[in-house]
Length: 121
Image 1 (cartoon, rainbow, N blue to C red):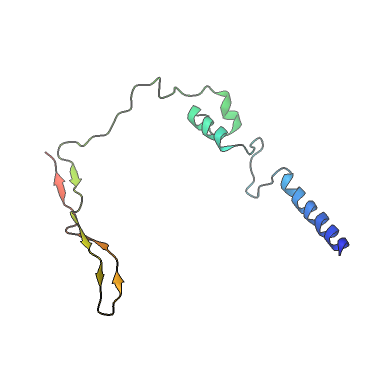
Image 2: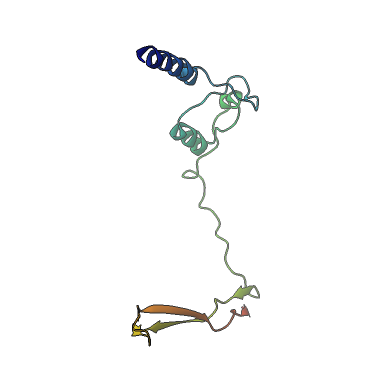
């Protein structure tokens, strides 16, 4: 019995040792690309340095803080706007049926219309 446990422990340790080795990817990961924490990838994306490591030699682009504020799209006159549908919430109070079963309170939500297009002028 002890021999079986020893063999099982050795088999498990040999199988788990493969997890500690360098990863091999079936998709053919390019040379020089390694696994790294998500925080490092995020930091590189903020700096604009995503892509192949050779691309890191170029200076990062100007950050948004140094650039002019972004242009915000607004609704132009004559643009269609879809109004939200009108809805109605109905509260149904707790009630007891003919068999003596208690039905707890509930809400029903009804859509009164599908909304409407409005053209702003």
